[in-house]
Length: 434
Ligand SMILES: Cc1cc2nc3c(=O)[nH]c(=O)nc-3n(C[C@H](O)[C@H](O)[C@H](O)COP(=O)(O)O)c2cc1C
Image 1 (cartoon, rainbow, N blue to C red):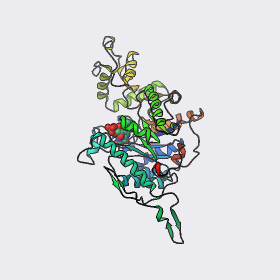
Image 2 (cartoon, protein in one colour):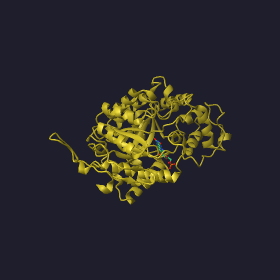
Image 3 (cartoon, rainbow, N blue to C red):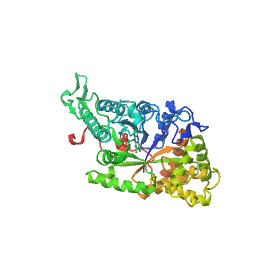
Image 4 (spheres, protein in one colour):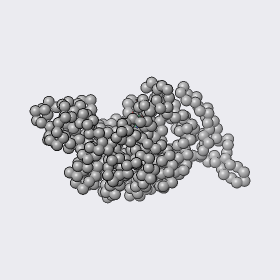
């Protein structure tokens, strides 16, 4: 099993996480929180720490911090010095940056971390983000056509300084300059002359991650990426998705065994299932409970927003409920309601969370990871704690040892680079040039 961890904007996945009494309220701008998270992830021998990036104010700042905060690359440069083996995966959008910027920044990070970096390639679906950078936005197919150009140009730039070209011979030969040549990349959307100004890292170049929905994102994952952060709403979806994606990877002439999919999972750990539910109910109250109740109504097709929170949904009303066919998480919400849970308890189970929620004792949470893993959802998971560093600590100290004892997780790193953690060979440059 492969695991990476994510801390969202320093405070975990729940909107109310920043209010949790024992978590740092200002975590989103506190680099020490991220550094501790990285050190914890390394202590647990995880593949890496993963950072998404959505640079805009897209939440209600009156009661929650921005979804993204400090720039991932800045944080990862710090993490590179605070850790030795941990992979560092930073998001840079192909819609927001030019290829030379991405190639240089990622190569710098890869060099200062001694080959532990992943570039998470995203195209950015959110209009507010795109408008922070440009006056207008590229239409959909153009955005993805640009993404392919940016990806190719970045890889060609990386390859423009081959392994071995750096000589550092104090007799007076710094590099074999004949090997370091311009690439003269001219696309429809981006151009870059090159060469890159930095040599490859011990792993050659960063591992290519992607996190995208839709047909274009899927095609990119199947044909270009080494790893993917995926957001399955249910176990059945995750199984079907990996079945299809691995077939598409094979069809593209690539090996699905060398591809790591990380299914995003939220975790809430306590000393009993009941306590985990109570913890989650409290976090719900600290977030935006009214909108959650509203959304539950939408999932069940009946108005529950104004009903008492601590009572089951009345049977007469429940008879009219139907899981919303447009949201695959709805059958879970429906099942919970039909079992007679109160509205508060239904919500606490997490049916309307962005990620499936594994909750309960450390054993129960470990069982859930094992169940999903053995069900065939691909190799890995991206773990997102509910409230922040404290809940990540619980995961690392209480759940990871169980998974290690069951032989599901590594107990030591065998390699030093992220490529080695993922079983990938050294690579520097665009594949057809290797
Ligand atoms: C699991 C997941 C994570 C994503 N993370 C990011 C991110 O960190 N930053 C970003 O700009 N876009 C992110 N996206 C958005 C995608 O890059 C993409 O824009 C989105 O899936 C919409 O697809 P479209 O671009 O074809 O409209 C993410 C998407 C998914 C499904």
